[in-house]
Length: 60
Image 1 (cartoon, rainbow, N blue to C red):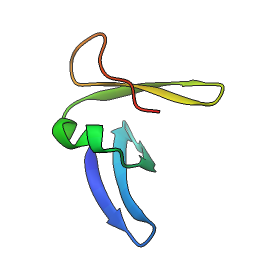
Image 2 (image 1 turned 90 degrees about the horizontal axis):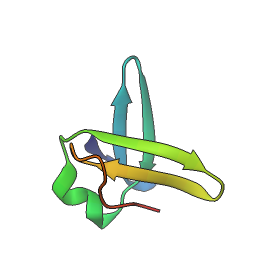
Image 3 (image 1 turned 135 degrees about the horizontal axis):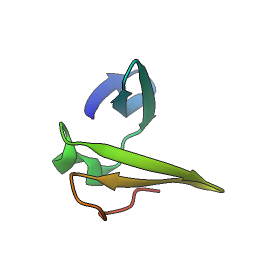
Image 4 (image 1 turned 30 degrees about the vertical axis):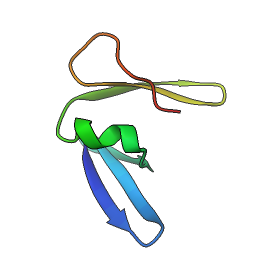
């Protein structure tokens, strides 16, 4: 994951294989730039797991 500055604001660029996703930046992401990230899409948003842990902080 890395930060991307756009005219609409700061976003997180999440790369996966040959795909990428841009998501709105949250301050909790600052300390996780360059680390692995995973997400599970659910009704009402995505639950993100940051870092190499099995459980981590959630970004909504």
